[in-house]
Amino acid sequence: MPSNRPSSLAITASLLVHDIDYLVTMDAERRVLRDAWLHIEDGFIHSIGEGRPPETIPASVPRLSGRGRIILPGLINTHHHFYQNMARAYTPGNNLPLLPWLAAMNRLWQNFGEDDLALCTELGLAELMLSGATTVADHHYVFPRGAHNMIDAQFAAASKMGVRFHASRGSMNVRSDLIADWALQEEAEILEDTERLIETRHDAASGSFRQIIVAPCAATSCSESLLKASSELARKHCTGLHTHCGETEAENTFSLEKFGRRPLDYLLNCGWDYDRTWLAHGIHFNNTELEQLAEHGIGVGHCPNANMRLGSGICRVPELLEYGIKVGIGVDGSASNDSGHILAELRQALYLARVRYGAEAMSVLDAFELGTWRAAEMMGRTDLGRLARGYCGDLAAFPTEDLYANGAENPVDALLICHPRQVADLVVGGRVLVEQGSIRDLDLAALQIRHAERSREIQNNLAG
Image 1 (cartoon, rainbow, N blue to C red):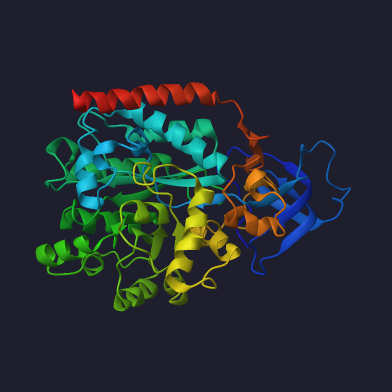
Image 2 (cartoon, one colour):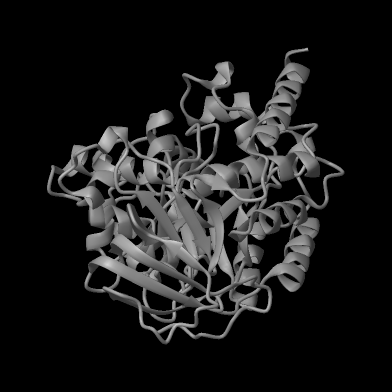
């Protein structure tokens, strides 16, 4: 059972959720409780049950009705690029595979700054929250010259929104046809800033609301020295370690030509045989590489929509799980998806597995695991992903029915089998952040206007 020690940085509360139609615990028995209740005390789940809540729960504890609700553990997004939501459905890249698409995208960001990333982070978090996410990892690796406090700006935005935020401090230091000099940083600058962030922002306590992940962009855009130093830094501070790997066959070919090794072998040779590592996409691994991933405890962030959008391929998720490899869902960049609906991402994970392996390859509860305890395990969070005593009081409450699922015989399965819906309520650490479908204390319409205006400026500046 996770420690009940609260994070020094957590903003938590107590709450009783009662009269819950369906409580999907995602515990070891996969129990789905009916007419249930859940009591959160100081940010952590104290108790759950069916029927009437105990009379011993103080009357002063705030109440939230679960009537007409399906409640899941708060969903966990293991890979994203918030900055890309200023380039959604961007015509020059709409019909291209990964590398040409990157070439079209990367030209946009030369004048992108801290305020822009804060705006993108707010909008991206709003999307994720309204689709059920309570914990988010964002991978940011574009640091135009003069933009020194990008990650700090993200933490400020995440604190305002109230979710648990894992900042994957990305980096690039090798020039290529895809990456101009303005986007690169020196290795010493990268490592110094990453260590500063770990020392000032990282909180490893149970219930943490903010963590740092050491996250070079990719082996093709980072030097061998930086890859090795990043692994050493993550090990030194016991943080997560993250990058892209196995996304396309072109990546494998390039790596063999440049390094004489396939990408995973190259990373392992750089010290990435570390059990806090996870790799985004992981589509094009062979069986030997699956054995290596399992042996070293390395996970895969599965990004089904982006993999389809860019024509990259289908990740072998059922096989990864059979090998004992950790797998978690990733919404991925908002210009390779092009949105941030985590419930829709789980639906695509379910159906892609069935396309490749048959209708019995993955159930709805199997898919939910990718967005709950499996994602938490991969990110090193033993306090998230289940609705059980001692876990964080994070939950997503969806309406039992909407127009697209009206009359469904199995409302829980209908969350993915029918059209994905948005949350009715969202709770993080016992605090109600979304109520009756609206994010508290946020003028969403105004946020959308500011974001759309700045997106057009960035796109028009390049066109001009």
